[in-house]
Length: 356
Image (cartoon, rainbow, N blue to C red; front, side):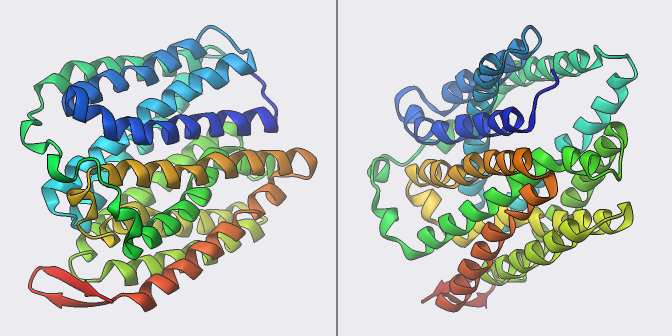
C-alpha cells in the first residue's frame, strides 16, 4: 500500500499492542470457559485481521487489522508457553524447542513471499490467503488436543504473590528490553536492508528467511545447552552477543558485514525467550496468572520501540532509527549481569537448584 515509515511503525506497534492486551485476558479466560475454548476463540482473530488487509489500505483500518493479529498471536504464544512450561516443569530445553518450531514458520514465510511475488503486484494477496488457509487448518486441528490435565490449580489461580519474587521481576525486566530489540529488528529488517542500498526487496526477503534459519538453529542449540548451563549464564552471554552484533549490523556498509551482524544477532536473540522464562523457575506453574502478567508487561517493549524507530527514521534515516536499539540492548545486558550476580546456581542431577 506504499506506507511511510511512521505508518509502518504504527502497524508493527498495533500488532504488539494486541499481543500485550491479550496477556491478562488470556490468563483469566481459561478459569471461566476452559483452556481449549479460550485458545480456539482467540485464535480466530488473527485470520479475521489478515482478511481485512485484503480489502483496504486505509491506515486506521490496517492498524485495527494488525491489532487483531496481535491479539491472536498473544493468545497462542501465551497458551503455548504456559502448556510447555507446565508439562516440562519450567525447564528451558522444551521451551527453546517450542520457540524453535515457531522459527520454522518464520523461515518459511519470507520464502512464501518470494514465491507469490512472481505472480505480479497482486501476489501479496495470495500470501495473505495462504496464511488464512493455514489458520483454518489450525482451527480444525485444535479441538482434538487433550488439555484436560493442564487446567490451572485453583488454589493459587487468582494470586499475585509472584509480583514480590525477585527472580520473576528480573526475568520480566530482561525480557522487556529484549523484546524492544527483537520486535524492532524483525519488523524493520527488510526495510533496513533495502533502504541501506545493499539489497533489493526480493533479496531482502531471502535474507530475512536466512536470518530465521540461524535463529532456528540457535534455538535448538540453546535447547541442548540448557540442561548443562544455568539460565543466568546463558542470558548474560546472549545479551552480550546482542550488543556486539547489533553494533556490527549498524556499522555495516556492505552486504557481507551486514549479513555477519544479522547472523550473529539472530544467534544472540534465538534462545532469549525460552531461557528467560526458565530463569523465573517454577513460578509459572505455581501461579497461572504469572505468564499473563509476564506477557503483558514485557510486550510493552515491542509496542514502544518499533514506532520510535519509525519516527526517527522518518526525520533522519533508517540507520539512525535502528541505532536507538543499542539503548535497550545495553539495559538488558546490565540486568542480565545483575541477575547473574544475584543468583548463584549449582547443578543437581538433571535440574538446577538456584538460591540467593
